[in-house]
Length: 255
Image (cartoon, rainbow, N blue to C red; front, side):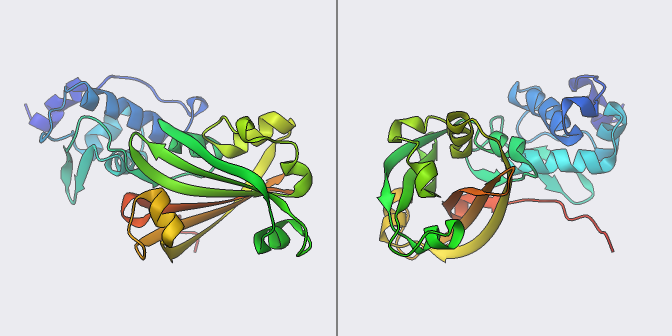
């Protein structure tokens, strides 16, 4: 029997349904378990993509999305025209970003911890630009560090307009996702986050917070959160070491 076909016996047989979430994420979970359990040894091959698709009754696109997720975790290495190779039993702590909604953001911060450094009133051009504050008017600024294990993954600076910020104390930010603390504390729902990604270099403060050298490349992600009435509630700036962070997304051909 072909070894790749035989390896299908190491995979559970399960029907996937969209009611349980994105198919590729369900498939990634099903493939991840036999890898972490050691049923697929490091250095061995997964079944071919076409065999996985047939086994679970999904499309090749779904299989490739799932494999990309496992590759981003450091579990496999994809190869052109060949089955993927197992490279590790447990995911690396490196973070990659692959989200299209707030639920994906929550999955992104799994196993992470947020350390709050400070929370105080400040004046900043950021507050003027995003919340319409006057130049001499102070808003609130939360400074924190996101870590996974011992690795510092992001320096996060979060701004709030004066009336929103006044409702919080430093101890209120108990969730690794700051926007969830905001929703819970204020009893409102943030409906959208506008995302901007840019490249920067580490200054002295960023270098100290992230354990990198001054002048090292930094990937900066800005997120402006709005409520249902389109009011700007929160503006967060997350700075990540460029060598430990990547952004992954699908670009459909709509031409």
